[in-house]
Length: 292
Length: 348
Image (cartoon, rainbow over all chains, first blue to last red; front, side):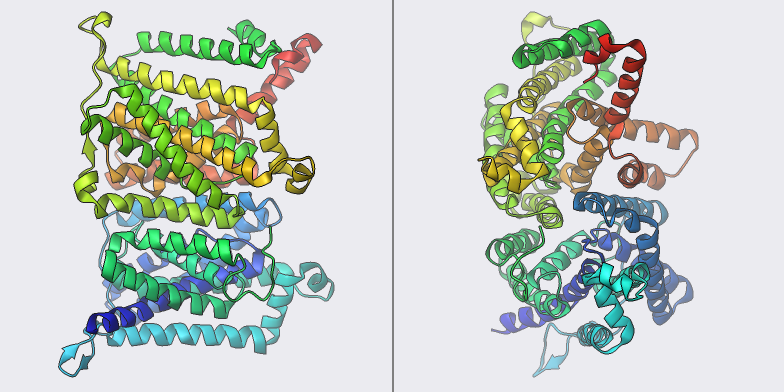
C-alpha cells in the first residue's frame, strides 16, 4: 500500500511536468496548427544553457531566469525564421521541418556540451517528506513542480480568457482571415503563441532535468509523453493538457513501478493509439471531428 | 550507358522494363564490387541495405502520403529476427531473411492498421513513440536480446565454388546487393501498376479515391505493410553485413536519418532512394575526414552528420522540396528539350 501511495505521489509530480510539455504543444497547435516536434530539442537547449549559467555563476535562480528568457526568444525566432514559411503548406512539410530542427538542435548540443548526460540541481530538496517515520516519494521539489505547473496553467487561462491580447490570440488561431480584417496582427499573435509555448517548454525542461539529467537525447521520451498527454486532452484544450498530463503521469508511474521502467514509452504508445482510435478528439473534445 | 537506360525507360512493358532495370543495376553492382577494395565493398553493402529500407519508405511517404518515423524500429525487428535465427537456431541465411520479412510484415500490419486512422502530426507522433519505445525492449528482455550489447552473429561464409580467397566483404556486398535488387524489382513494378496508382489517388484526394471504389484504409495499410517488409529485409541484411544487432544502432537518429535520406533523394522516387542511400553511407565518412583535416574535436565530428541531416531537412522543405532526383530530372528534361523531341521519351 505504501508503494501504491509512493507511485501515486510520484505520478502526480512527473505528470505535472508532462502537463507542462503538453501545454507547450497545445499552445503551438492552437496558434498555428503545427505540432512542434522540435519542442523536445528547444527545451533541451534552454536547460543546457541553465546548466552552464548555474555552474559558472553558482546561482540556481539566475540560470532558471536565463533559461526562461532564452526559451521565449528561441520560440519567437523559430516561428519567424522557419515555421512562418511552412504554416500554410502541407502538414507533412511542417512536421519534417520541425523534425529537422530537432536533430539540428540535438547535434548542436552534442557539439557544444558533449553527448554524456550531466546532472542538474533541483530547486529545492529532493529528500521526501517525513510522514509517520517514513520518507514518502514526494519532496519539497515536487511541491514546487506541481505548484509551478498549476500557476502556469492558471496564468494561461487568465491570459486567454481575461485579456485583450489573449482574445486576439484566440481570434488569430481560430479565424485568421476574420481576425485580420478586424485589425488583429495575426502574424504577431502566432509569434507570441510560439514564444509563450517555448517559455512553458523551457520551464518543463528545468523541472524535469534533475530526474532525467541533461543530455542531447535525454528529453526524447519527455516529448513523447507530452505529446501523448496533449492528445489525451485533445491537442486544443489547455485544461485537457493538464488533466491529460497528470493522468498519463499516474499511469506511467504505475507501469514503471510494477512492470519496469523500460516499458514506459511503449505504454505511452499504447495509450496514444487507444485514445486516437476510440476518441480521436481527445478525452475533453468539444468538437466531434478531428481536422484531417 | 545512356542509350541502354533510354531503351529500358522507353519500353512499354512494365515487367520487361523492371527486369531490364534490375539487370542493369545488377551489372553495375557486380562491376563495382569487382573493382572496389574491401572498405568500399563494405560501404556498397551498407548502401544496399539502406536502399532496401529507403525504397519502401519513399513509396510510403511520397506515393501514399503517410509519414513514418518508426522505420528504424521496424529495421530493428528484422535485424533481431535474423540475429536470433542465425545465431541461436542455426538457420540458413535465406530462410532467416524471409522470416525477418514475414515477421516485420506482421508488425507492419498491426502498426499500419493503426496508422491508417491517423493523419499528419498524429501519425508522426505515434510512430515517433514506436521508434523510441521499441529499442527499450532489448533492455527489458536482456536474456533474449542481449541488452545494451546486442546479439553477435557469425559472418556469412562465401560458397567454396567462388574460391578460397574470395573476400568476405564482397560476399556481403553481393548478398545485400541481391536483396536490394529484389526490392528494386518489386517496387519498380508496383509503382507503375494499378496499386501504385491507387496509392497516388489516395494521397491526392481520399474522398475522390473512395468515390472511385478504392478502399482508402486498405490501400494505406497495404502501403505501410509493403514498406515495413522492405524495412525488415533491410534490417536483416544489416545484421548480416555488420554481424551485430544492438539497440544502439536503432535509436531515433536512425529513423530521422532515413527520413532525411528520402527527402533529400526526392519523395516517391526510387532513383532518389539510391541517392539517399549513398548519402547515408558516404556522409559520416566524409564528415569524419573533414573533421580530421581541420582537427576538430570528436564531439564535433561525431555530431556533424546529424547537424547536416537537420539542416538538409529544413532547407529541403523550405527551398527545394523535390530533392536530388528532382534536380537531376529538371536538368535531364532541360537537356532533352534542347536535343529535340526524339529524346523526350528518355526523360522519366
